[in-house]
Image 1 (tube, rainbow, N blue to C red):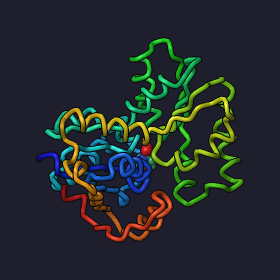
Image 2: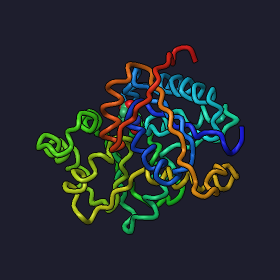
Image 3: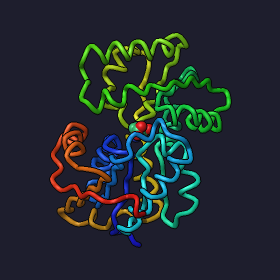
Length: 274
Ligand code: DGL
């Protein structure tokens, strides 16, 4: 494995494309292999054991493509499975929790931080643990908002129903007077403006995907794994390959919305064989 190998990104489905979008933007000359486990989505309501077993298989699939670096774009998998699975790999792996938690600490001025995510992410307390390891005095308020996932996926971005649910969920966050809110789920950046409208201008939103892309750039630079293509003139665009574990049609439709562009080649794989 060397610096012209691809970067692997995986998620429980299409949501990780919000992270991939940031990677494409910040690392345009890198080749990317993306795996979306659409056949077993969602991960967010599942147990640690199941999510860990799925994560191990997702990583095995990426390793088959000789990836040089792996990004776990799924907050649920990053929360409960990343430590165990990354310890088994030769390839460096990062998740989305640590970059998001660090960015929240840098942003807050009052030390009162909210975290929203799936049941798996919130139940694991992963964000709070990392935030407290950096600043033990920070106050962290965590809340599962599972309905945001299907709303984002179905394109319920500007609908009154989404505002109703957001107001209901986020009332408790408003009551505890946070100044920073971590969007701890792949899908939530798509609802950023709804969440921001409900929380008001005084609350800064942290997009873990953006922070993870910056962290990937830093780590690849440090490990001297940035693709040498970037020094060519003109530097060629990276090649992006997409793999899914069930029929690709829905992935393709949602991907258009998540990425703002069409993906033409999506390959279906049998993840149970990994
Ligand atoms: N990708 C998941 C996450 O970020 C959300 C969707 C799911 O539950 O699988 O936690």
